[in-house]
Amino acid sequence: MNANTDKWWVGVVAIILALVGGFSVHFMSDSNGAPAPAASNTSPKAQEAAAPSTPPTAPATQVAAATLVTNDYGRARYDPIHFKPAIDKATDADCLKCHQEVLDSKTRDASPAGLKKTDTLAWYQTLDTYAGEQMTFHQRHLTAPFIKKVATMSCTTCHQGNNPRDEVSGTSADSPTDLTMRKMVDPNLCLRCHGQFPYQNMGLPGPWHESGAAFQNNCLLCHVSIRTNRHKVNYLNAAAIEQEATANGGDSCYGCHGGRAWYRTSFPYPRHAWPGAGATVPDWAKDRPTESDLRFLIEGSKP
Image (cartoon, rainbow, N blue to C red; front, side):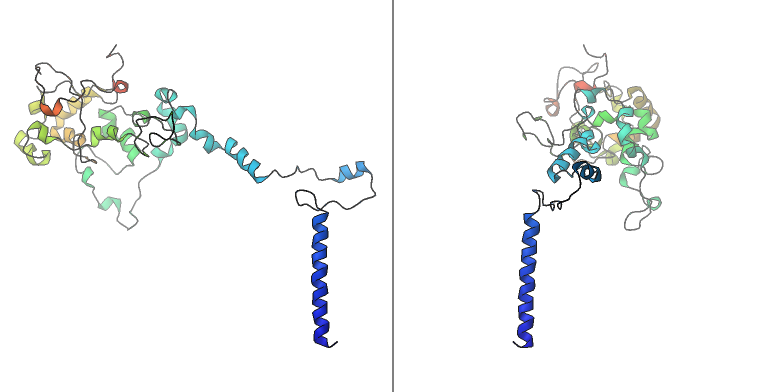
């Protein structure tokens, strides 16, 4: 044989030895793939003392299942406080135990493009009802000076809980039937203060910022005698709203009734009866309810 042939046979022998060695290791392994311990002449007690104290590792599926059960976030999502009836009695303090960051966080000093917040004014900040520096969404609804004056908003005013599994109606036989797809808050609630100003229903020639001057920018010029039974729900301070309207005119009213209209439609407010209203109901109001939603009624106002 020449030198090349010798090298070829050496390679073949090496491969055969490797295959045999691998087979031996697999054959001597236990069911989990760990090599079986080599034979020893030591006593069973000595072997037990020398054995490691660390328990065997559980299969990955068991570890995942255990993590799912004990994971704090997964357990918190299904805490009873996020569902009825517990959420109906939840206080702001109860909610803020886990969600304090909604009030502690602050707005960016500048946009990603570099525009400083001190150099810009959003359209919804042009009214006096949006005074002071920019605040976050939750701060404006819970802690801003104006909202604390005219409203008694709480976390559960907007948030009524939702099952992460049911974010749209009809996902199961027992799922709620009134869910708005993938919404944590019912948009109809937002619409109450962020709907368009319904000037057409009032017979006005145009939106308030166009026609308000003709009425001395004073909503109470008409509403001192029309639809006087208003704002009597548990998340508003009716007396403070009337005082604000008297002192600051239409700007305060328009601030909630169209001045910050995030929606293109207006909210169909219940048509509460008022002294001198009469029995005639205009066509645009014939299908409207005559009472506010049950959960917003002031305690003791209804049997």
